[in-house]
Image 1 (tube, rainbow, N blue to C red):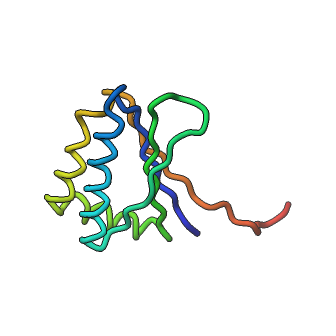
Image 2: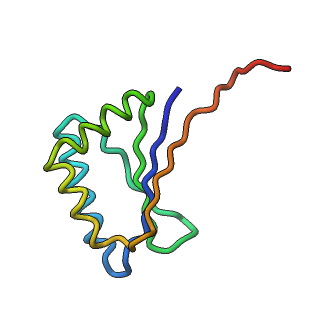
Length: 107
């Protein structure tokens, strides 16, 4: 079973390029620490200036281990925080999705 973590934020108008630069730096620092860096997505249609940062994990234990390592690595966490000035306050949320088993008991 796999898990997909999505961090969704609205970026301030005129700041999308600057935010992407901080995200590239963050992802680079994560990769250097051996952490999954995921991918960035934008809606084809929907909310303007929204960005989705998505990372996949094979299980919740791996997610928890990498999440702890993320916060423990000061240079990684500081790179994450450097994107905050570009985010619309109160717009961010985190969603975690899990795979649905394709086989399950029938009644």
